[in-house]
Image (cartoon, rainbow, N blue to C red; front, side, top):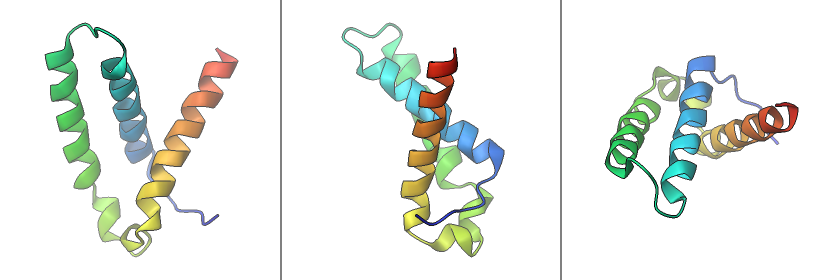
Length: 81
């Protein structure tokens, strides 16, 4: 597995995206319109983050690894909570 130097704000944004997505995917989510808007805003922040202009960010596998890292961090946090 390749390691990428993801900025903390990018990882936190991806974690927030995953949390909003999980909430929206629940049966009969509350505030679904607000959640969809939130996902859109977070998607734009992730897509246009300056990291993607760096040499490490130009590697296609970096986007996959960002999602994996954010998911792993969320799972670890849920276990320790």
